[in-house]
Image 1 (tube, rainbow, N blue to C red):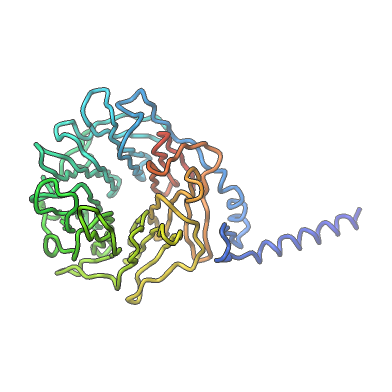
Image 2 (cartoon, one colour; image 1 turned 120 degrees about the vertical axis):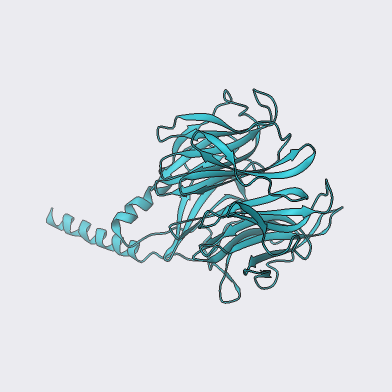
Length: 397
């Protein structure tokens, strides 16, 4: 008996020694993060099985069913907000709605805009100190406009009036700075119903919308706009230039930042491929990070701007679609659908030691390439919205 126990103990020591020596191989297609700390190892083994169904928003509510723009934000007070616009509303028109989910996974439906602006095409959401904000594109008597609202008590209240001075196309992005300054980037056009415009960024501060730099500052027409703001209140825009508005031939991919007086490019073009998709940008520790996929090359990239150059994260990434970057507690997260299987969602956190993978597992989602998903990170965990099945799933920390 003693010999058997001694032999088993030797096997155990050999096994644990092998585990301690496991490292992240950048060449591996499927990265796995294993920490040396035993407690974190135990957590890591079960990390893909910890997803829980948080809420399912049913078709019995206002217009949910087939819907257009959907975004999710959560605060530290235990509320999750899913903002969406249905194709068909029970009350008629193109109203915008919010499903407010509590910790108990119960939810209520609120209306953040009535159908007075006509059809609106895009919704963007942000959270600032537990207060949710929404920005959306609308037509007001035939003229395009961008509206920003914040949640005040039990109602959604417009902030700052109209953002657009004259005309704009239907692409924009929205971000909030560290001092509650609001930023909107949009394509400003020269006449009504132009398909694509040049890039303009406006900032709302001291009860006034002002243009940063000059209007229409981009060298060419701009599309696929992405906006992020650092803790130093410096905004960055990530976009693709458009060479021909009639055929919409896309060429260079660009990142620019506002230096206090004018817009400056971050180095050369990110890419000159005409088929860059799944673009996302965040700013962490005042360093911009971008993610994108190149259809021509069949590859995905995550890069950061440091030392006057774009640097690759030295990691092997799968081919990603519907990519989104998030920052929480100075840690970088990326969510994406695997390009080989659009039903496979993964959330990855990048650490000094490697990659921690939060795969979707155990809950059947119905993600389609066009609809995709959205996710947000709080101290409570990761909240993921499947835009096709109306499910919100949750991974606790």
